[in-house]
Length: 336
Figure 1: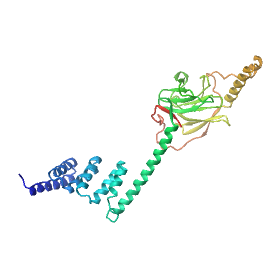
Figure 2: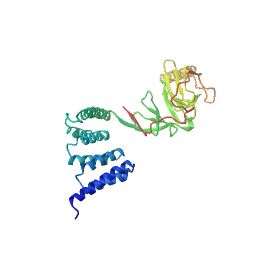
Figure 3: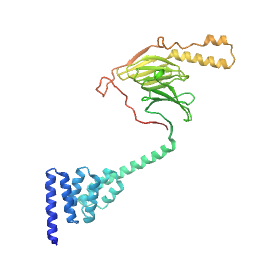
Figure 4: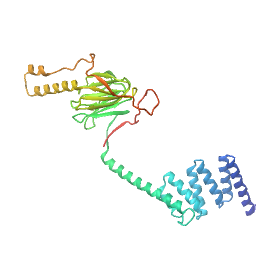
């Protein structure tokens, strides 16, 4: 049987070989050599230290944590290793465990000041996580899934609390009942829908949609009848100014914001609404007919006059045009 001294000598030889291999950038061989030295001499804490540092540097974080912990069982007062382990645990998110090892480092030691700074970081992060947990708990009480829509983009709610959700990938606009139990296709490709993103809705429940792929802005009345209002270069967002009776559309390709006058639509919708009220009140038909104004056929000149109100917005994207919008890949719609 070999003597104890020869075993130690073999471990030391392997230890030095491990260092040489690391300096030659032979990382895996170096790690294997340090492990072999430890198997020969299990209390060789210097080998554990080098092994842990190499494992950490090569991204083998859990292996490094295991090596540091084994070292500290052999040499509990190795405060450098205790600090290195705590720092690694902090990076991996093991906050309580990191704090446990930091508490073993005396404040008057060489690593006492560093340990205090790291402990403050851990306390701050623990407070942040506690606040996040509180917010999530509150959110879970207020949040519920009310519908499932592939690649949802624009969303608006009408006067009866029905939701209209644009699905960019499906080229559809879905209508979800106010109780969230019924989902129907309100408009699709047969009604000029192609890559819808922005949606807006007016007081008369007329829906306006910006079709990114088709380059059009379309209006739908509450029955789903559609009228192409205008064409735009990659229309994205759309917003309604009720007081001015205008919609505003962003054109990504032109770096512009375009306005479109919908006052005629408001007038026609108001007349239809009044006619409906009078019909319910039993007013003679000949009076109603004088007040009802029909929407023009969709193949005629679009209503209103579009105008560019701002252009040449600075982009961070150097491309001349955007081929697809930035979207969140989610299939669920939430209310809060």
